Image (cartoon, rainbow, N blue to C red; front, side, top):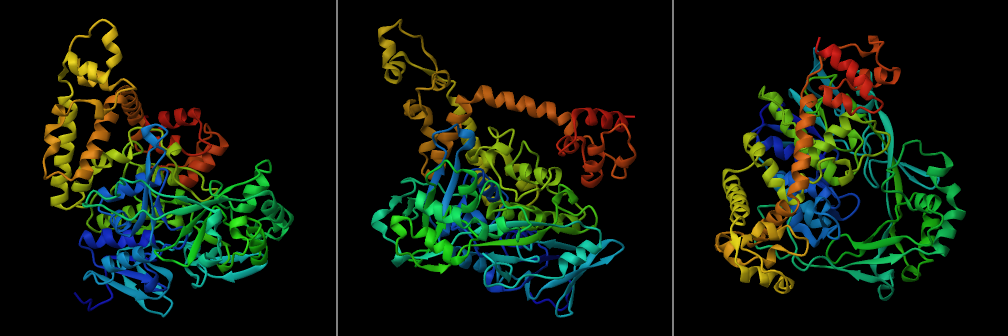
Length: 625
């Protein structure tokens, strides 16, 4: 379909992970989309680490899959090693992760989008937004061309005023080798939207042939891996190794001696970096008692000569980076393909957004990704999908897709962004979710399937298939109410033979015992799962989910009761025109924070930093008058 005019339904600015998911969601919802990017060849590029998923991030990817996102499927196609993390801990924090072939990932993302009939790509730069009575009507490009649409999604990543730091060297760039974006930050500030500065970084890339691999330790993934996407079948990815090494006191000494040359310590960088993903300078400065830190050597694509040094993010001068790494035996003769660097960039504090990711200042303007102060591919993709869906819902005059903290990690992510202070780049962790036992990676379909179907984000075929999977899960749980015979009980727990013979009892009761696994239960309870039409990958997940629901039943019920209690205040709306600055019975800090954040509900107000239970009591009285 060719566009005869420059009028669209949705304009997406930026083609990183947030932009890709925004475009994909909008075209799926039958919107005509314009994508504006500085370089179409960089669409879907993995600019930093060669991995998808991880602690809590894997849950985000699973949730994206239920909502029809691209990242899960592309990760399954491009993954070279898959692993389920945190297996030594409780199931609330089990998280899938994959090493990725960056080149395959990028090509797959481009193949999925570039030739879509509802999408037109503009190789240009947005320098301003166009408004009619404080509503979006389009954007102005640097070439002077105007593109019109009732909604705009900004997903500019680290490109807004991007400044790369390598020691004293400063390069104006969105990331190394790519132009930064200028003009849009100032334009939005002139409209009353507040901005700030943050910092992130990336490690050096090493030449494979210059590494002594005999002095490294190979690390493989799972032998029976699980995919991210429910649509993936016949899953047999490669299991290519990564390698780990350790820093040493000699390496630390070089860095400690040259800390003053790092722009983070010299005062050149004013933006705050991610506390939970510190640079090697920060690690050595903050943890002086540690003699070593673990580093992972990760190939960036299959057969790659370029090796990513996970754990060695730095902005030291290139020469110092090299000297420090060469103190490690495996890297004694190492050579760089590219040094590590820090990048400082502008962002817009997301407390200025609604829970739909629409601006509270300008109707039809949505923000997603690192422009909201987040860090990570998965956080960006999740926001991108929500923004793309809600821009489409806005155009259709329908209710937005909003997820609660008890429904999804995506809900936790967005709620945190719009209610908490963004003092550093936001990274998702399982500890951020108070209901994490309800938000398991293995039950994303159970939690979100109906909502995905209601918003037309999942195909009828996949909906029917997943619905069948959930019915099988529930039927299997119900079937375990059937009794085990005395002989079956002895087979499961032979130590009971020396005690008083037990009476026949429900299998579910025995499965709750910590020493009993679902594999110990007689196969007669699972005959329906032997159907050849069932994806064998799903059988494993059904077993896991059944076992989890039974063993954790008491804890799950306790969290569900907590959700019920919170729901009473969660959905109490606050008038949008309330003047917090004039409510003298609120604390001064609460007045300032609430006036800036302007929460939509009493539940959101409770989570605003600096707002106390006493302040919430005052607000409740005013609202219920």
